[in-house]
Image (tube, rainbow, N blue to C red; front, side):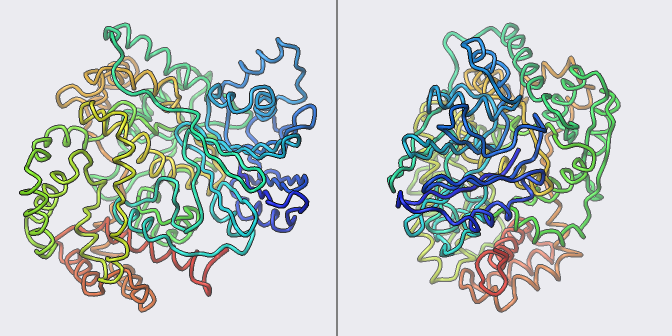
Length: 626
């Protein structure tokens, strides 16, 4: 696990600034505290920070191919590199190191972009070909590892984090109104456009080529979704899933450094830990995080699994004082990021890093196996989508906009209006009409010229004919998973130099479940049907019977009490109000209604606070950190 950055100048006779490359590498030192390296070749400059996991002595980067024709910098792990290595050795190739990086660069030399589909892992890579003078960037199938790029005054820049691009210098920091509108719609920014105008995100499953100022992006992987015909009978399917999951976990136990696992007490992480225990010759180190507030903490559930499986278990408690770490977490996110579960993710990562360098997680289980409660809700309220558009979206929408957002029943009215207008896409946790009620008149006219749901509608095109649950699963795999879940885990774990691996997102597991009948995933009110049946062999009955519980921060409770003064101080600060995004009266109303307990606006308050802290750290000239 590492951090990468680099520059390619349009002028083939120019050379990148070495001190700029050093700044790019230093600003992401947290991603790779063990070693660094820079390689400059003509117009290309590559910078690398290393977190040593495999081949601790000879895996430093940038690394060249055996003939010196191609250089690579690589962030991630290739789990099937032993098999790929064996295939090339059988063909006569002699390797110099034991690292997956060398296998990666030699495979690219032989097969070019066709090699990407052979990789089983998480990765963001840059290849510089000395012969063709072409730079190639690539990102893994689901977007576990980040990669950003921008073209600035005759130079192409890229890096694991946006701050790499900023650190090189001379990059304007203009907030993209559509991206900000997207953040305030769903709590994160996804798709190719980032929060900064001119800065792009390489999408999962894509690669990019840059040469002589020409840039082209290509898709190398596309998930095929929908039940296979004919489907496997349930018992043979379960046996195949069992073998695939075991292989996925076994691949991710490969490490030359201490390894453990996150254990929330939920089904996904518990299955991963139970399989790890069966594949390990010593007790698995597990780590959990909890809260004092009832209804939020799953510590007792995690303890039950730990006792059943026999792990060496560590617990961490998160309290309102954790709010003070928020500026540091915002710094690591690069863009405004409104998922408050980043806080417990950071604390459990920090606790794990005191004992291990690698941790396995249950990330992806809800998307792959259909575990989100909203899947059932959307299936059951599908009738709301059949409300005539003129009635729901037309009259209902106008009424929702006309009424104060504090009106009883307003949420239900706005939801019906929204669903009858959009048809398939439900809101991603934050109601658009509340967002619009907060906007100032001037900013509202500018922001609402962008449709934050247009990209989601386009994503759904390949699965329009499938049931609503399958559509939402497909959408989450391409949007919520890379935009929220994987972003959160990557940034919070890398903040403490911890590598996190997600076996439930092994592409063989994902593809198997993507072609499974819906009945193997959601049956009546039972979610994750296939995974639950396998878990009966591994886990205590209490884990299988517990209700679904999100990894949420009790921010609503905190903002009513100990953190109210801090929220008011930040959001009503003259600097905050002067940005012009929000109507000050609406912000005061949200604060007052929340404090009085009439409405829970905790999610909104968190998103607004994060946005203001982000501005101060990345935009404001007198306070920004890079």
